[in-house]
Structures are given as structure tokens and as C-alpha cells.
Image 1 (cartoon, rainbow, N blue to C red):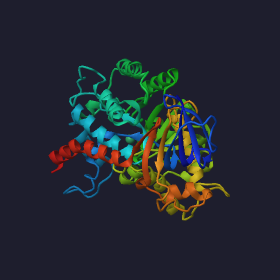
Image 2 (tube, protein in one colour; image 1 turned 90 degrees about the vertical axis):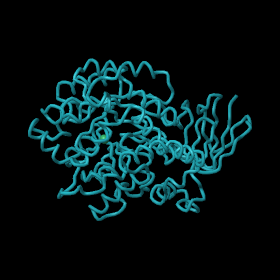
Image 3 (cartoon, helix red, strand yellow; image 1 turned 60 degrees about the horizontal axis):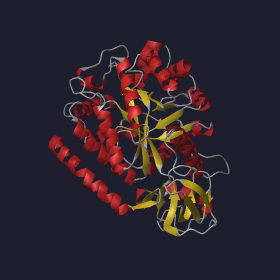
Image 4 (spheres, rainbow, N blue to C red; image 1 turned 45 degrees about the horizontal axis):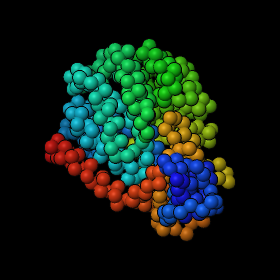
Length: 459
Ligand SMILES: [Zn+2]
């Protein structure tokens, strides 16, 4: 039996409908969206508020949520803190978490993502083995724990198992990187294939593939991995240009900057996601935009770690595809990520309205771009408002101060620039509405083991 949902208004990532009538089939898939009531009349369920597609979190390391806020200090005796000293602290956590603790932290982190507006996440996953490097009896033990955590919480997940082989360009891995290492490439891809076949029919799960960085994977295996991803039509993710030191190391070893080298080697593969393309120069900005690769920006983490600034105005004006990621999960707030990208660039350029063309609303330009990228990233997962997709929408309170009384033409900008996760009233999946109070309870429930873990480790 078909079902009819009615919203005050709905933005499907290209058009507005007000009011909006969504017809779903018996399994909650979209048959049509329109602003006029369809015939024949179905019994309708009214959900008050503004419906928009959920945000895609294109880059996360859920386990790092366990240490959020606990590295904001200069260690006794040290003169400066930077990405590399932060990484030492992060390794302290990564080398000691048990699989069940990773599952606990992932559940809490994913529940918080859902509460704050992300309805899907790409989890860049590299904790594969036991702390000393020995495999678990089931090689995909930790990968599966993370996927199951997402399923339990109800967030869509693209698990991206990550190949990690060297400690830095041409360097053997350190003791604290042993958990991440797959020396046997065949074993690594077999694990990915196993995960793929296990979760193929599972709604809300996709398996991608990735390399940690040019620091961690030599050219030979990297080439094999990119080819593997292409052959299997999988999304490919890599940290590409996060730190100046890494750019210099790669330049010395390969004679080119990491972005230039990667693009020269692998070109514009449509399913490539370059995470932290932070240090792209003007030529690289054009190259990536033209090739249609997806650039993943994580401004809260990039700011926290002092990485640098990406030239978003230039990239966006060249039609570059970009997404946001919560990365270290210090901040879990899509509104914050998007605004941070824009505001940092405004401060650098000392100009306003830099992520839109003349005559365009910035909010609309950004929404359309990130949803074009989302369509690409989610590949075998469907976007929640396309015909045939399982309906998935965030419902925003239309009386929230950011949007109350705002004319339709300014609504997307008001929503993005003045809004915040507190304007979320709930989520609709299929025809089931989950209110924000229920989501808050889920967060509280999932946080309790994480609170215990934090108390035990950082008291
Ligand atoms: Zn990352």
C-alpha cells in the first residue's frame, strides 16, 4: 500500500516544494515528490517542518572521538605542538583500543553524527590488527565491528578499508603503526572482497577502498589498489596533501607534489576522493576541478591540527566537487564544517560572498555542489530523495530563528549560515519519523561506555 507524507516544505537538492507531498511505496521508497496533492487521495501523514536531504560525512575516523578535546595542551617541556605531536598522542589511543572499545566509541560517534545531521558516513578505517600487528582470528574483525556499530545506530556507512605499509616515504613502519599494516596486498584485497560479499545485500552499507597516504603506500601497491578499485567500480579515498612536511617529503622522493604526482599517475578517475587537498596550488586546483575528482575538506580537524587553508573560492568557481568530513570528530556539526571553510577563506581574502556566482545565493550554490558530490560518493547507496530511493530526510524546525519568516529565495543561505544542529526536529527514514528527543536518548545511551573509557584513560 502506498503512503503519503506531507511536509511544510522540502528541498530535494535541486528544487523546492511547498507544501511537499511525498508518495512512498510499501517499502518506503520514493515514487514521487510534488507540491500538489496526488490523485487518488491516500491517507496522509503530516510532518511539520522543512525536509532536506541529510548531510554526507565524507571522512571520519570514529575511534578518535574517544580523545576529542583531550589534546589541547602543550606537553610539559615541549616548545611547540603540531600535527606530528598530535599524531603521537593519537597513536597512544590507536595502539591500545580493543575491538569492543572501538565498537563502543563508533556507536557513540555515529549516534552523535545522526543527531547533528549526518545521515551517512565514509569511515576511513585502518585499525585492522592486534596492537602488536598479529591478525585477529577473523581478519575483518574490526572492520565488521565498525559496520555493525553503524547499522545498530542507523547511519548509512561506506566503510573504506585502508592500505598502510610504510611509516613514511621509503621508511619501515614504526612499532605504533603495526596495527595498521598489511604487507600482503593479496590478503588485503581478499578482505575487501569478503566484506563486499558479506554486506552486498545489506541496505545502508557500501564498501570502498583506500590508501592511507603517499607516506604510507609505495607507488607499486598504490597503482594496484587504484586499479582494483576501478575494476570493482569502488570509491577510492586517500589523504593527499595535509601537511607541508609531507608535501616536501613527496616532492623530494617523487620529484612532484603529492597532488600533481597522483593526478599524473592516475588522472581523473571519477571515483577518486582526495582528502585534505589542503596545499593545492592554483594549477592543482584547476587540474582537480577539471578531472572531476572529489575533494574532501575537514575544516574543524584541519584547523585543530594547524594543517593550512584550501583555496575553496577558486576551486568552487571552477565547478570543483567537494564534500565535508568530520575527520577526527573533535567537532560533529555539518553546519560548522561548511561555514568554517567559507569563513576562513573570507578572512584570508578579506571579501564576502566568495562561494557563489553573481546573482546566486551562497547557500543554494553550496547545497547543490555538496549534493552533486554526495551522489557520487554514495554510489551504490541511494540518495534519500531520488525516485526509487529509500526516503531519507532531515526535518528542520521551521520556527527556528534561522529560518522563521525568511523569504524562500534566502532560505538555503539562512539555513546554512544562521542555522545549527539545534534546528533539527527529527529524521524520516521510509515513512518512519524519529524525533530529536529519541535521538538525544540514543546519544546518551551510547555515550556511557565512552565516558567510562575516557575516565579510565585520561583521569
Ligand atoms: Zn583522516
